[in-house]
Image (cartoon, rainbow, N blue to C red; front, side, top):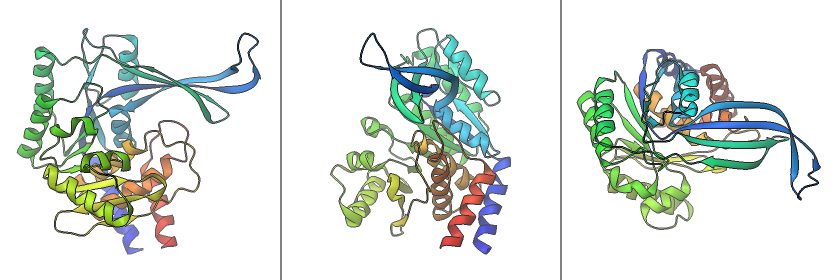
Length: 325
C-alpha cells in the first residue's frame, strides 16, 4: 500500500505541471465499419461505414496524453493552412501552439477498421518546411513557454531539425527541466545532450550500432546509447516484453508488460514518453517514472486506435500490478 500511496502522490502533482511537446503533429482519422461482402467490381472487401472520427496523432497524441492526466500539454509544431490543421486545433483546444504555414501541408493518416481489425492505412504525408520566418516564430514560442519539461516527438517528417533542437536544449538548460526525446535513428546527430531517450527495440539497435541479443546485449545497448548521446538515462520499449532502462551510475532494470489483451499498439510509445516525462517533472525518480509509463502503456494497447490513459485508469492499473507482485 505504501508504494501505491507514493504513486498516487506523484500523480496528484500532475495537475500543476505543464509539458512542452514539440514535434511532428499528425491528424489520425478513423473509419470504422463492418465487412460483410466482396465488391463485384474488384476482389476487395466492401466496408459498410458506421463511424468516422479524428484524433490527435504523433506529437499531438503525446500532448493529449498529458492533458488526459490532468496536466497541460503545450503542443508546438508546424502544420499547413488547411482544413486538417483546423481539425487539429479543434481537437487540441487549450494548449494549442501549432504554427500555420502556407508552405507546409498537414500530416494525415487515415485508418480503415473493420471488426476491430485495421484493413488499410492511407497516408497523406505532409510537407513541413522550416524556413527562416517559421524558425523565428518557433524560437519565440519555445522561449515563451512556461514548461516543467520538454518532449520531442520525432517522426522524421521534417519538423525536427538541428536549429530547433538547439533552441529546445537551450530552453531546457536555462529552466533546469528534463528534455526527453522519442527518437528516430535518422536524426541521431540531433540528440546529443538531451536528458533521456525512449527508443523501441528496433530503434535502439540502430542507435547503438548493432543488433540486440538477450539481456546482456540490451544492457550494452542502453549503456552505449546513454554514453553516445551523453544523456542521463535511456529506456527501451520492448512491446510484449515490457520496458528496460538504464541511468547514469546505475544498473539496467526491467519491467515486464502487464496488458490483459492487446488490441492496438498505435501510439503506445507516445503514452510512454508522455507519462515518463510528466512523472519526472512531478518528482518521480526514474524507476518510478518508468513503472508509471509501463502501466499506462498496458492500458492504451487494450484500446482501439490512438488513445490516452486517465489518472484514474493509471492508478487502478498500478494497484493491480502491485497486488500481483
